[in-house]
Image (cartoon, rainbow over all chains, first blue to last red; front, side):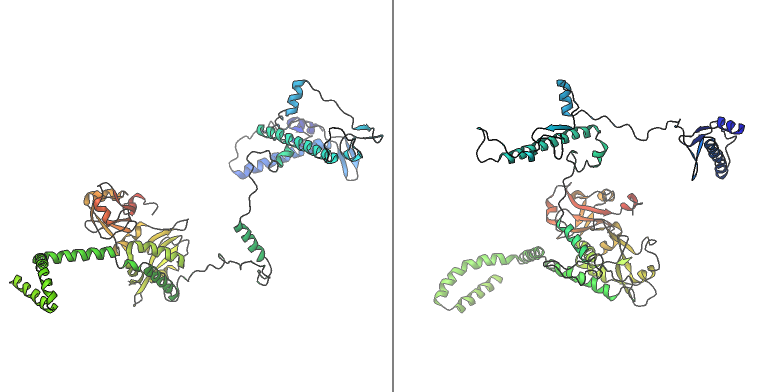
Length: 341
Length: 187
């Protein structure tokens, strides 16, 4: 018993938390290897657990069918709180107003005497006092408009009041959310309630997504959708990714005929698309112009001959009107000859 | 490593066609005298890790021994497909383009350095230019001694070049051989 007491003095034991701590322990020297450190720790741990067990068995116990039962004392060590304290909720609009006006809340009885039916009824909720359902007759007043259903009017007014209160509730929650003091049960549903400003509007599902989903659903049968009846307007499935195939890297002897065919096909397509570029019109026109220019330069007499040709032409024409064209031609030739000489 | 599919082939050929025109046929159909085979094979295009290589058939055959992950490179790198799916030529294909180029530009020796630092070709640095370049055509840039230096896209047509002021851009450079030094790690 003395040993136990000594141990208890050595260890701080908190039975409420089933917790033991040895403040006097020191490593004489840091253990060289990790394994030894682990061994040492285990040893110390066992001692502490033993201390807790000893203390437990020294408590007054009650015999039970399963064994001795012990009532743990209150914990002595106060563990720190995991989460920070919740922030206080900002006062609602009504609370602010009531404080300003000095309005105080009074407790009201849950049950109220209903004069209409002569019974005690609940103040709120189902089967309550002054329930609209219990009013069989509403007396007409002079101010009543004809053609308006007073019952429906009462119902709609009540509905509006409820909606107004709901709006006020959301307003107050919004204020609380700004400070970060939303009650936890509301926090979880905050995205569903229109109080967070950044709430994304529910997205419209795009046509493509719908098609994708429809395609997935259609092919999610045992046969991969092969034998299912197609709906009117439903397109056949696309197999884009699944059936993407590549040519073999090496096909028999190096580049196979398939790949050769493919490259030739692409090449010829490309060539034929750009075939109009073979004839460069601009270049052709340029070359033609240059050639003509060169010709002109090579025959400097020709330009003068043409001008001289024009002069005698008119008299020739006059003469040729009477005579045959052949005659004129021959004359022209003779004139050339004369020039060249 | 795999062959290009039809869409990819079209993309690659269209890009090459910009630079080579009908000489593309030479690139595709040139015989390769590599490997033990007596009859010459051809060159083909192979894709590995989004990069397109221009490889002789015999090399492809031998490269099939190597795991795709371990295959760093083979043949001549031509370009790469970006994550967006478009095809970019890289500087390694310069020799191939230069041999088959349709549109060429020669640089004055004074402006060679500027281009090798990645700048565009200006009118002032222009030595010679082939005829009939239109705006947007692929152009290979040479030094006056016919050493290929870079390739890019013509910013102006040949006709417009005559009337421009000296510091206007003629060719927008896409890649130059200075990149071998500048971007040694990335290439």
